[in-house]
Image (cartoon, rainbow, N blue to C red; front, side, top):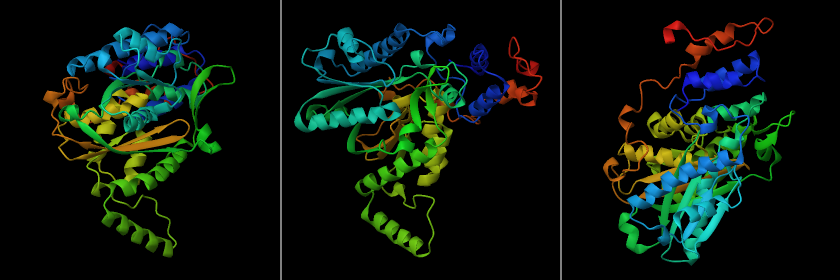
Length: 424
């Protein structure tokens, strides 16, 4: 787990940072919405983040799939030999043999298994994986698919001083999920959700959107993940275009008509609506939002006019686990289940964003009342009663707020970051 104190140690180890970078990171972390119980890869705790190896990335992924996929198959009493389709999405690690091949080798899966390996698809990759399976199911009946979604942070830690790249270190954390999908009628009673619709929006042709979220090198040649200032604008554009397509498929006609009349009146009055102006709650009970950061969650809450209750699962996931890239949606969904919010017939609206720039969304229908007792693998089970906490603020300001009072002309990098006695 990455505590506040340990985060300070990591930042202090980077000798390329100065006072202005310290102040920037302090502000970024304090406003990130991330708490003290997120996870980082092992090499960070070993102090080797500036010298990653290929094996670090592979070991991180092996640790994930040996644990997660193994537990999922065991709980569902499904043999690895029964899996017909395997889709793996890990954006920032490419190995030879591929990660799917390593999974197939570990679990001794069938020789005729259909395999798809997605890289470079960003945080929205898990819904792309689901879309691949959905399309395969159209042509192949009675199949069982396994989707493994994670991200390899070990070889992608940025050790430079470019602010737009350092930001990624503050937001991304280790995590992953495994999902079983099927079109076998015999397994319908065991299913938790049914996919109702899925839409993908890609703005890669727009230069501003394409460049706002990209892996690149800084001036010193250090590779990092660049997050541009125009990222919120690109995300908003992609979200709006995605909602235009999926809204007619998930909302009642009466709500669509009401929205059209309201929009027409606003245009006559020469007013530009800031919010969507459409009530998605007329067709949706739960909102599963990608935990890209506090600003992302707040932006979607404002745009869709959602309540604090609606975005609580996303906000708590960000606080507890951070941004786990493409797997974050499933942590948010697991929170809803652990809180016993999901009832038969409810609809869950998933929204994700990713580099490219992409916005993908889908709607799931809950097939039966879901309780924490029946899903032993729910990652929230051991701590769900502690959420939401009274406060989700982190102690960075209290521990490192003294940096704000330092003078750039006289500041010297301390041997160790001092911590107030009252916090010790």
